[in-house]
Length: 256
Image (cartoon, rainbow, N blue to C red; front, side, top):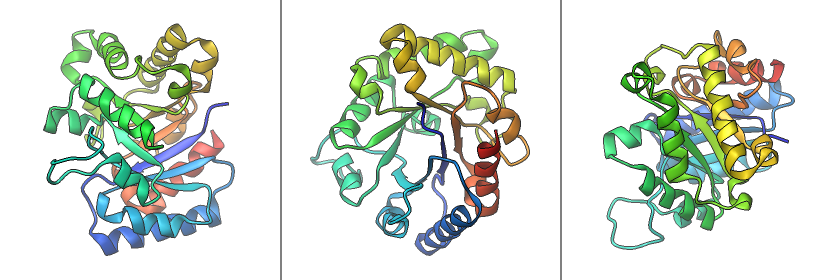
């Protein structure tokens, strides 16, 4: 059975006190307003990880994740944070391969495969992001791009490992732009991704894996997006910075 998940990505926003205040609001709203969903995840900057994990204790529906890790176990990598460090504070998830990491820091598919491996080694559950640019979509290459990202970053894993991944499709052209892929475009790609998993690992594995949609999801468009059969939740950017909007999206998902 696929895990139903809504994950928030705070990106590089909020100072320490602002992050604690927002997370407290999210927890309180989830406790008061949300039933049914299996997992709400907040992926926050490193400075928030330990405190948010402490706030989330005793509430199994809310978990905390990092936005990045280094691909090495340890070493002379000044300014970087390892998977072991992230896991040691109690975080359970990590985003790997977000388009902003790919574009701003040149992270390629082979490097991201290493990050997935080190995350799994340290008992972190990767949320692996994939997506195409507007040029790639207009050129009709979007399926090829996604297939390559899966092949080079994910398909070296065995079936037991693939079960520990969450996948996220985020068309690069819709992230933070206010432009959302049509529900047909989103479903088409999620269906394609699930079929790629089925071809590599079998239909049972494809039926188990969760695939989230990310890209300007908000309370107004969430119902149409989440109604699609192959969309198992959302990776929410800007709307996750407002507790009311984020929990509204969670509740929309519960009703879908």
